[in-house]
Amino acid sequence: MLERTADDNQDDSPADSRTRDAVEGPLRVLGVDPELGFAGGETQVLGLTLELLRAGHDAELACDPRGELYARATAAGVVCHALSIRNALDLGAAFRLRAILAQGRHDVVHFHTSRAHSMAPMVGGMARAMVVTRRMDYRPNRLFAPYLYNRAVDAVAAISVPVARALEAAGVSPDRVVIIPSGVDCERFRPPGADERRIARERFGIASDEFAVGTVGALEERKGHRYLLEALAALGAEPGSPRVVCLIAGKGSLAGELSKIAERRAISGRVRMLGQVEDSSHLLAALDVFVFPSLKEGLGVAMLEAMASGLAVVASASGGVTDVIEDGVSGLLVPPADSHAIAKAISRLRDEQERRRLGAAARERVCAQFSIAAMARRTVALYRACLARQGPNEGRN
Image 1: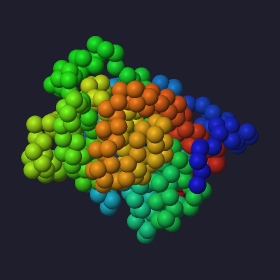
Image 2: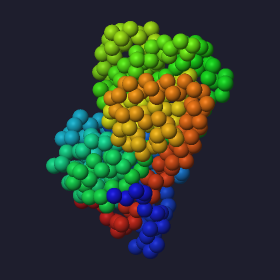
Image 3: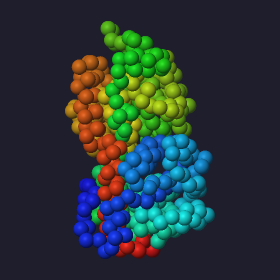
Image 4: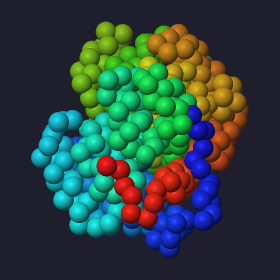
C-alpha cells in the first residue's frame, strides 16, 4: 500500500514527446459519477474537477442528466456528458461511455462510484490510463474486486487507511492502492465572523441563550443519528446551563424513525429536522459543536467541512475518522454507538475555551492536510504516475 502518490518527475526519460506531454503537461481527464444525489462523494468529484480546470487541465464529467451533480457541474461551467448507469451489468451504459470516450483522446478516465467502477472492464483501451476511487471502509466483493482493481484499472485511490485495508482484505494488491484523502474547500468553509454567526443563528431559529449541536449526513442507519438523539435526551436541562438544541441536516430512509425517537424521548422541542440543506456552511456557522456519530465512515466530508469551519467536533472513532482527528487535540473521539460518551463529550464542550482550542486545532489540521487543493495535487500525481508506466499508445485492454 502506498501512502502517497508517486512524484510528478518519476519518469525522467519518457519514450517520446507525447508521453512527456502526458506526464508533464496538461491532462485530458474524464470523471465518471452516475449518482442522482449529491453526497460527500459528489462534493469531492465536483471539487476535484474544478481544481483540475483551474490548474489548466481539460476536465469533463460523465454523469446522469437527472442528477444533482450534472446540474451543479453544468452551472459551474464544467462540460458534462449524459450517462446513466442502472447497474453493474448495464451494457447500454457501457456502449454510451465508449461513444463518449471515442469523441476525444482522454489521458485518464477516473471512475468515482461503485456503479461507475463496473464500467471499467467494458471500456478497456479507450483511454491511456484508468483510475478508480474507493470511499467505503467495508470489504468489497472478493470475487469481483481482485479482477477489477488488480487488472481492469491502473490504480485505486483509497480515501483513508481503513479503506485501503478493506481493499487488501478483498485480495487487492497493496501496490495498486494509493491513499488520497478527501478534501475540503478551506476558503468556503471557514470560521464565521460575528455578524455571519448572528445571521446564521437567526436563520435557523437558535436563540442567543441556546447551545446548538448539529450534524450533516444521510439519514441512514450507518450514520448513527439515533445515538446523537439518545445523547441529547441524556443531557437534559442542567441547572445554570444553556438549553441544548440539536439540528440535523439530511434526508434518507430513517427520517420518520428519528422523529419518532425524538417524540418517545420527549425531546422533539429541542430537535430540528432540517431535511436537505443546500449550503451546509450556513448551518455550520450557527452551531456551537458538530457531532459526527457515524458507525461506518470512509473518511467523512461533512466532518472535514465542520473542522475547516473552526468547530469543535465530537466524532465516533470509526473508519477513516481516526485518520483525521487526534483525540483531545483536534477533536473528541468516542466509541461508536455510545450515546453516553457522546453526551459526556458535548458536556465537556460547554466550556467555551475548550471549544475554541479544539476548533482552532481542527481547522489548522484540515487546511494543512485535507484541503481540496492538496487532494487534487495528489490525484494529478497519481494520474501522471500511471501514464509514466504506459507507452505512448498504450491503454488498458
